[in-house]
Image 1: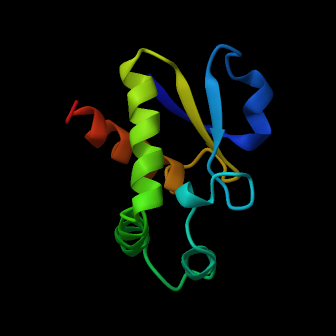
Image 2: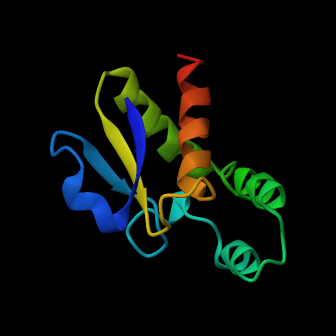
Length: 109
């Protein structure tokens, strides 16, 4: 199963899950939005739909696709994965987009 989570609550998530930090400079830059994109979103220069479209485009790089496939393979093996980011619990966070991208990959297995 794939879930998402908020870094401030990481200690409350089940220990049997694999927690993957999807934040820049936390070892998974290939799963984080570019600094430019994040800045545009934080400064309210783009809408959520624009953010989603641009971020999805960023995730088409070979490195990002390989990492998303690795995560999907773990989920397909019935491993519990939680994608964790700094953003709060709202729906506007790239980890939710990543979850959807992993779920799309699972459909191809």
